[in-house]
Amino acid sequence: MTSKNILDLLPYSKPFLFVDELLHVDENSAIGTYTFKEDLDFYKGHFKDNPVTPGVILTETMAQIGMVCLGIYLLGDTFTKDTVIAFTSADMQFLKPVYPNEKVTVTSQKSFFRFGKLKCDVVMTNEAGQEVCKGILAGMITNKL
Image (tube, rainbow, N blue to C red; front, side, top):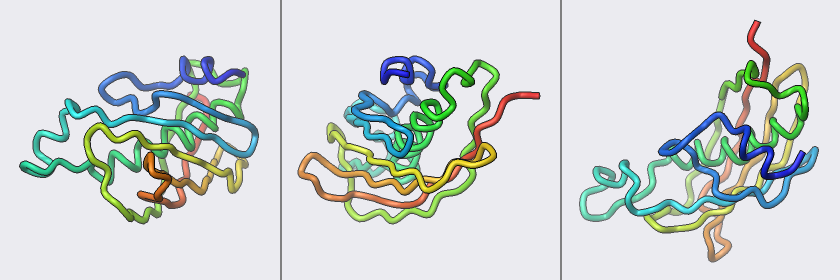
């Protein structure tokens, strides 16, 4: 499965799609990028005169690139329109702010994938290569009954 195929299968659309490029994906890892454009709606109120990307959006970006893209790759041809992806847990550390117009890179390393449960160690870096957040994300991937 190619990166383009995976991006086409993502169950998100703008304004809630936080993946620009999928640079690498294999059975153990995924790497992708996203640029937080300054016109994104959440910047209007977070924070006044000094907008910063909310941690929940950083977590979602890491989940979309680091778990969902990797999960689609792992499922391969068994991923269909009936596949359901559910975020189950996050243990995150936020180390640096991410400002409007910053491009970030997410690197994910699979911890395990068993019985539809995927757990990954994920790191987000800015263009200077500095870690801005990191953590452990988990989710379930299953088909509708």
